[in-house]
Image (cartoon, rainbow, N blue to C red; front, side, top):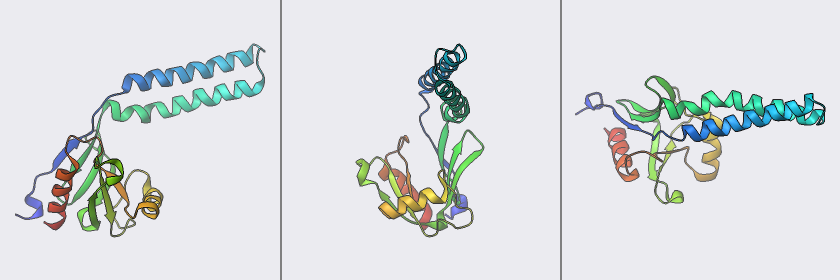
Length: 170
């Protein structure tokens, strides 16, 4: 059986935490507004008003991106030609062609709850991952691998490792 005949396998990351995130951002926005009101009423220095604007603005800016995984879900897809990290059904956050994977090993640093992936060339065409090349290079300089995948997936890391190796060698 060649690689194009193998069906895609999708592993969804658990959703959740949306209510906690909404409450945290709402608290940040309210705190920011309170600081701004204190400054506008003359009860606080301009620094507190500026901090309020900053806190509220930051919360409003981060809210949509932070809530995305909680509502649409993220997933890891073992496709016919590589590993994809998706948000929802169609937004690709990362892609690693199997031809660019040098090694897949169990991450002993987290008690075996994820996998380490070392790439042949992190700058290769078609290779991308959240955090980008800079993040991959920092991880490599510290641990001699480029990515950590599989944490939180509904598949045991050794089973995911076996599936990846089969696709890489297939």
